[in-house]
Image (cartoon, rainbow, N blue to C red; front, side):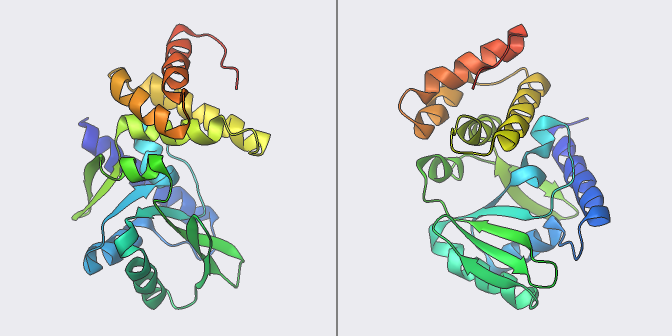
Length: 212
């Protein structure tokens, strides 16, 4: 199976699973079509975006998109116009679109106000699903996006274990990681993060225990 087919199939699988479990679920391709229609620069992230790199798609309640700064307001307005039942909650790093009936956040419109996100959106990997072309993070950017919350000591521990699960599966599913590029992304998480993320890759490949 071609790599791009893996990502398209993963999106279809995570969509079907989430639609079964999540009340009033909004499909990622609905969000993608709207954002493509208004011409904003964006990237599908979260489990819908990274599932193909893990080759383990699963259920998630929300669609996460990282939108370039210039297009953020336009993207939010377009989504609110399309999904009139949603209510926007603007926060420092994300605008959350919540369903007041279920109180679930169904769409997260993330802001590129972190160095890792600003760089990741420049290194997008294009995928086509059902006639819609959209970007996901490159392999190395996807690993860094899992590395950042994994090492965050303030993050809920159960969520960090899930991040570790995803991080390890990305490594196991992709033997051709560009370690130099990965180190560059790791440095954007914190000074010294480049060496740590590369060492974590070595440990996973060697079957050693990750300590985080």
